[in-house]
Amino acid sequence: MRFLALQVASLLMALQLGAQSWVLQDSGVTASLRGVHAVSSKVVWASGSDGTWLRTLNGGGKWETGKVTGGEKLDFRGIQAFSATEAIVVSAGAGPLSKVFSTSDGGTHWQFLFENPDARGFFDGVSFSDRKQGAILGDPVSGRLAVFVTADGGRTWTRREGPEAHEGEASFAASNSTLRVLSGKDIRIASGGKGGARVIRSADGGTTWSAVQTPLRHDLETAGIFSVGWKSASHGIAVGGNYQNDKEGIANLAITLDGGRSWKLPAQRPAGFRSAVEYLKSERVWIATGTSGSDISPDGRVWRQFDDGAFHALSGGWATGPKGRIGKLQTALPR
Image (cartoon, rainbow, N blue to C red; front, side, top):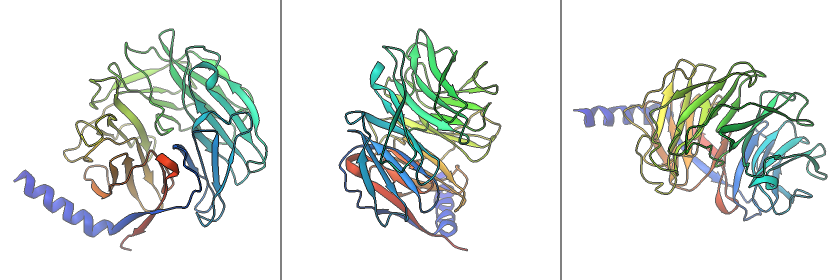
């Protein structure tokens, strides 16, 4: 009976959502791309390994590429773009390999802004709520997750006392989406590892923190939450799993409708590990992706896989992945 109900739900969803596919782009690079940020339907930035940055100004018709000056060997897993000419990139790596650069002229010149002050630190992601207010998340140092905030667009960064970390808990730098700054004061973090799969929130800009354990799996160092997407301040979805077994779908997605105070596993979830999730407002759907495929859902409760290619990160209907892989979501949604 339950199988029949799922079959009917899947059929109804297919009729409701129509067809989707990723239109692969000619990126011109072979770097691993874990950073992507869509400013608009036309302007999209991406970043990745070997100091790589990319930009399109015409919705993927042409991609410009280059290297971040001074960071040619760094792995830029996080990017926040503000316009066609302005962007900030954040690299992941041990201690001084975690750096922040910015450009104000479309990538022609890059300015060094900040370096991880902790020799054992590791930057996991960056997020801004507007042009001024932003934060960087890093792995635990001295028992606490590392959090740095800015109020001047990234020119200066101030350490906040991050939340206490459980033993074995960290954050994954897989898709630049374990950190979300929803407003200047509302900072939300997702964790992984054996002590992780928690969603941690500060409502006062990082002064105080509250944490909630989610039902996502966290039985391995390679498992936990890899991304949280928010449709609103109250409605969010967390995805993850075990990246070393990307076709395994054990406890890999949970939903909150109360701002993260409680999380539930839906009965039907994606079939494998997912490293990124977002709500696509233009199409009124949720998209999840990972190295074993991509899925779509109208509400987060029922999912349908529409692609089996490998991607890491999502933004505004764009996906980036290994070996320079970039996809643009093409939909044929009923109107």
